[in-house]
Image (cartoon, rainbow, N blue to C red; front, side):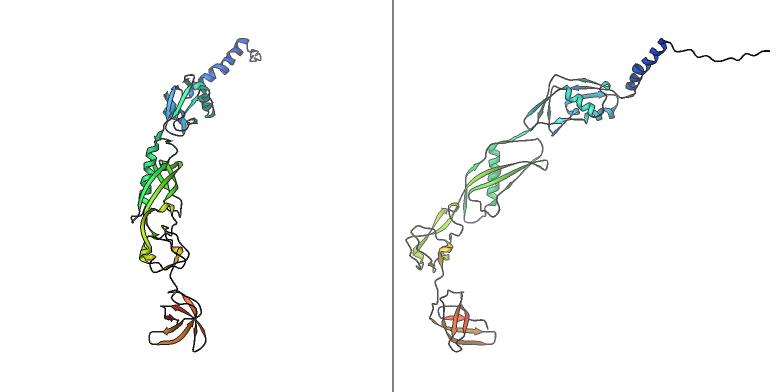
Length: 336
């Protein structure tokens, strides 16, 4: 029996076959990919109020879909920075679509409904000027020592109220270092939200501090010994006076003026001094002593001196110059 060689023949694809293949590539395959990916609907509100500094998609839109993880991914997309507290900001759908693309979201997988303009407002709390004045007043009162002085707050200059983001508000008032709270005092007020410093403002407090001041009752010449009837105590505003004015008359009685002082003038510590007990040429007793021994000799003063000052004194026996401590008008003491 003769066997003929059979060959398998393949016919060329027709135009219909090619069209069918192209349909698979361009239509059916993308549809299959779409069915394989999650889908969601995004309904954007026309106006929202935001507490935080960033605006997330989940804050401005209602998002629904079967895949919870995909929904959360959409909600966490940052759309824009929030406006300042109390301000508003407008965005539109194009910005939302841009952010979706940046986060690799296939726009064909979501249905977005949005108004022409989306208004975003930042929530806020307003601190009134009167409340800031109260904060500063309480701080000042706590800083004044409880002594014989009387504090009066004449004025607290606050530029205006302030606007802060919503949250847990705390504040802190600070004063310049090494400066007494009197007269015109600049103070800073720091406001924090949830523990983070948000705003600092400067205010000026005008303070009157009333206290006793020793003043002269009549003009006193230079080197004039001060007696009790030469001075009196008046209540004055210490903010307008030097820090070293005297408040106790006992600190002045028995001393003398270093220069001429007019009537009704406050006495300062640097304007008075102890009168000298000894002067150049005076003869004094020089004492040198220890626990078991005391030596005395005669000396002559080389320079005037006040009580407690060390001055040069000549030992008349040895002719040596000693530096002695003035004890009184007749006695000086040297180290043994």
